[in-house]
Image (cartoon, rainbow, N blue to C red; front, side, top):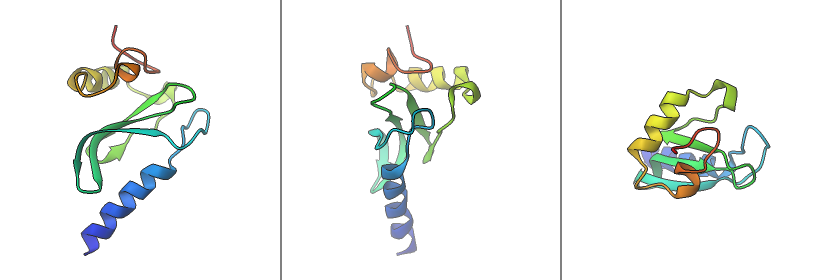
Length: 98
């Protein structure tokens, strides 16, 4: 029962996250892998500025541009290019695939 509450809380937290750059919310969610109500891998996208924030191993990486690791972002995009929309893979900010 405690596990279910934790999972519910995780999904609810995703609904209240805002873009750290322009404070826009709610963010658009793209699920890649989930377990019930828990998002394991995916991406959050700010529809206002076009930035994406990877969700890796249940953790949304919500860093501003200057703190993001370009190589990690590109590795994420290569790994999930077939499961993510073009607006993330080819146009996403701050990094995207050519």
